[in-house]
Amino acid sequence: MEAIVDQPRVHYINKEYGVKSWLLTVDHKRIALLYLASVTLFFFLGGAFAVALRLELMTPQGDLMQAETYNRMFTMHGVVMVFFFLIPGIPAVLGNFLVPLMIGARDLAFPRLNLLSWYIYNVGAIFTLYAIISGGVDTGWTFYTPYSTTYSSSNVLLTGIGIFITGFSSILTGLNFIVTIHTMRAPGMTWFRLPLFIWSHYATSLIMILGTPVVAITVLLLALERIARVGIFDPALGGDPILFQHLFWFYSHPAVYIMVLPAMGVVSELIANFARKNIFGYKFVAFASMAIAVFGFLVWGHHMFTSSQSVYAGMIFSFLSFAVAIPSAVKVFNWTATLYKSSISYSTPLLYALGFIGLFTIGGMTGLFLAAAGLDIHVHDTYFVVAHFHYVMVGGTLMAYMGGLHYWWPKITGRMYPEGWAKFSALIIFVGFNLTFFPQFILGYQGMPRRYYAYPPEFQVLNVMSTAGASILGFGVLFPMVYFVWSMRYGKVPADNPWGAFGLEWQTSSPPPTENFKQTPVVTWEAYEFSPRDKMEILGLRGVEETKV
Image (cartoon, rainbow, N blue to C red):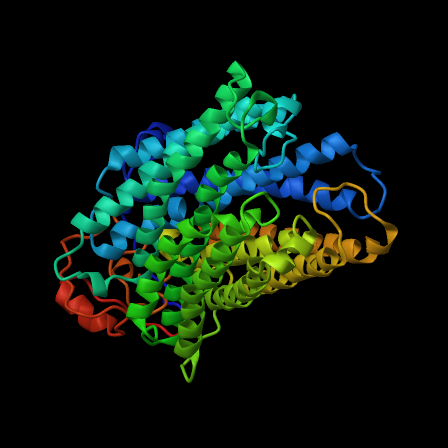
């Protein structure tokens, strides 16, 4: 059990108490908590739209809402979840908090830009929220033309402005991470001593600064066509709707890895710590992150097998889509090899990591189905695609996000959560997720199209199963919010390093002081080297009480 420490501590949370000190802070740890509040709000807003969708789909007829309302619901669910939770979630919260701590820096390279990125995120969010309150958008979260340029009378421009503004938040965050990792590593922290969490965020940051401007320009052209009626994408104006798809997916498929790569970094940390050994093939896993970032920009065409792109282009995109699975498979195989014959501690964070491996593997394998042009044409725009997307994005990213929150919660707050309830919640989320989305693979293969609010009666049983699973999943994700809030007041105060972990972030107090480290650490050990007490002597910091988990 974790040791109890009674003496009062001075740390980044209690140094100042005023609201103004939080709104004007340049401390990366406080900014991470500001992001945590914003991202959590949008997660539950997007979840509320999902609940409405699943309630409608319990019956074959459109009983709960009309077709137009349903269109707005699934559009706003996608917009909120993708652009305001999945993309910023792990980098903005865990990345902001941990990147400087993990490399031995006092803060990010540009603290004021970091705070500005949070304000930009919220300004974009306000535009999107106003669009929701004003009636929402009915084009689908992909904003395909000509729906978004001609036929839709909803708040396309407002939502587009919100997404456009929020994109600058991603760019600033990615730029900040890259400069910080290049220039502010502690003495001795070479590239191959970096935690894999840092490698993942470095690769993610490259995608952010290279890909986000493309979708920003696409949204800008969309607004120009809608306002000035300039023919860019709309065929009625002489435009090309396939051009929009090329531009949109050139960003949006790499955006998948903006969501997944940070999650993979979290899982690497959890696997290594709770297996008590170095990640098998550390360099292969590190370079796999970079390979995913590169290949991610080369596979956008597999979203367009049913469009007018040439057969030869389809063959090339199909081949590249199979190739991008290789570095992801390297990570999964290496995590599995790390766990083999290890001293495994089945604490809550590891349960989430194992859940990630299971769900992401299913999502990745079904992605190979969609990479095969012949099969993709059969299941295109069906619930098979919905299930695949959610297994990769939600099952993968959400499980890693929850695992990371549980693992670093004592570092963030200086408090422990109730372990028994946390394990129960992890089990509920895993069961609820599979019950929600696995039936959708069957529905899609049988031909049920997505984005329809009514369907033939023979699909009802599987839809009822999916709705029941969504209810369980909803309870599972709400429950941690309850005991996290409870733990901030009543949770046990652990030792500074309750897991006996290896990273620099654990070699300072929990919660950390504002300056992170009392003196700059000098790194003389390799990544994932389990000798915390020896490292403390090198750092010259106060000792860590090693505890059993």
